[in-house]
Every structure is written in structure tokens, then in C-alpha cells.
Length: 264
Image (cartoon, rainbow, N blue to C red; front, side, top):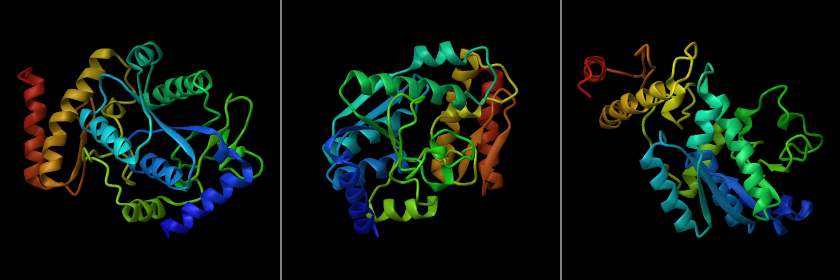
């Protein structure tokens, strides 16, 4: 299946002539963006990786991503968006991902334009399509969106493939991203960032961002040990877990108690 998909992407690139252009992939280190980068490289595209991080990013995931791009042999640019995220998110209500994605896309656009890239590629799959969004209203093939409002064409090579298909393709390619064993905001495994666990009805503050990271970093150690998915919302300390046992819940509650007492 992987060989067929790579051939199809190369055929599309040759038809549209984007295979001749410089493309920067928004690379988070997750399965979708890793597979996107891998397949474009295999198909012969001129690709580089662009990773945005901030002081609350998972360090293990960042290190894994750097090793992955080095092995793949592609240029990898890293940009710290801590300052921009604080400016855009603090004082507003969540989910913080809405504010963060806006900061990342804006920075990706200007990075691409200022460094000779003609296209931005994203790892969106068919499960990410949302009715009414600009990218999903593109005329013609939605893999390539050139709506002027965005400012630079967006290439989404996986947008026709369901999450389950992406899973199989990544497995065939031998892509195994580092897992923090987060709960994610959907049942479909969607890791990314501890800031997503700030309670959505709360005003975002830097203190809450720090708390979301420190609590969930400790909880992730428990989750990895037991191979279950656990995260904790803050400041409510609501526990979210898939397939948790009483033992896991007891360990997580102990972490929360320590944070409440100020001992962690």
C-alpha cells in the first residue's frame, strides 16, 4: 500500500509541477506529519521540516523528531514560539490549541515566504476535514489549496486517507513516534501538547500553562509505565483516562494531591 501511495503522490507532484518546488512540512513529530515528510521525501520532493516549539513542549517528542529528520536526511528548522503564544493566548479562554495553531500558521507562512519555499505541507488526514473551513472549500483537488486569504499554497498529501489508513501506512514505513501516553481530546489517538488540558472555561494564564505541563509530565510517567492513556485537566484536576485500573488512578491521584499541597 505504501509504495502505491508514494507513486500516486509523485504522479500528483509531477502533474502539478510542485515536485520541482521547495516545500516545507509543518512537522510536529506525530504520526501524520512524520508520514507526510517520509512519503514526500520518498517520492522525490524537495522537502524540509519545520517544527514549532515552546517552553511547554514535550522534550522527548522534540528529541525524537530531530533524530527522525536526521535519519531521513532532510533539513530541519526549529522555531521557538513561546513569546508569540503568550501574547496571543494569555487572557483568553481555551481551547488554547485554537490560539496556538493561529500563531504557528502565521509563522509558517512568513518563514516559508522569507526562505524561498513555494508551498507549506501539512499532515491533515480525512478525519481532520471540517465542513466550512477554508482548506476544505478549495476548488478542484483539495490536496492542494491556493486560496489567496491564506497567503501561500497548502499541500495536504494525506487528506484523502482516513486515520486508520494513515496508521497502516506509518506502520509499513516503520514510523513509531515517541508516545507520551496522553489521553488526547478525542478517542482517536491525538497527542501533541499538555496545554490542551487547560480547562476550556478558564482564562489562560502563564501560571496555568506551567501547571498543565508539570502535572501532566508527572502523570505521563505513570501512563507510560502502565501503557494506558492518561491526562489531567487544570485547574480542575479532572482525570481523563482510557482503560485505567484502580492502581493507575491511585497513582495519578497521589500526584494531584502532591501538587495541591505544593510538594511537587
